[in-house]
Length: 182
Ligand SMILES: Cc1cc2nc3c(=O)[nH]c(=O)nc-3n(C[C@H](O)[C@H](O)[C@H](O)COP(=O)(O)O)c2cc1C
Image (cartoon, rainbow, N blue to C red):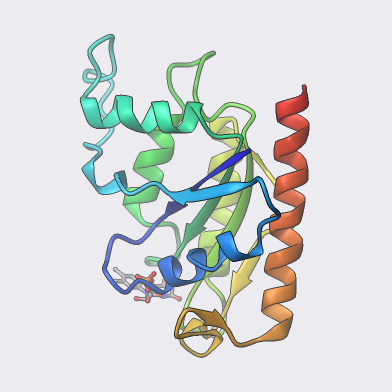
């Protein structure tokens, strides 16, 4: 089983990326997870580009989604919502209608912030957008607050956060396996 992980921050040293990097260590044997590194290469969504000859970066992204059984989608909060790069990627993933590569994919949603609110608005928006795009976000999204204290040197320092992430990832694996079996 394969999990594709989408990170809504492009910057080197992203806290969102740091948290996502802990996910593979929480997975059972036989489940692989990798970050999709090409979100920044996608052009702005344009229906005129989205025909038979869609850009190579879009085709590569859609192929990666097609090979995934589940998604981890992690977002920081930019001005009260999700960053444009993530919304743009989801828009590309949501087409072509009726055969969209995101359709039916279970998704674990993570929101991350150095603030105490844990990027709640971004989390809520991400769940909504994924659902409208055709993915199946799990019921309990996880918000990680004061991330600079919670993820240190690549490890989660807060036992409650680690337990919540482990639980969420476990439920994602269950949902992905159900999809594989169906
Ligand atoms: C354009 C911009 C808008 C931001 N807006 C918010 C916000 O609305 N809420 C929030 O908690 N943090 C906000 N921040 C701060 C981010 O949470 C912080 O920069 C965080 O480290 C970004 O995630 P990253 O570390 O994964 O890149 C904003 C940052 C930027 C650059």
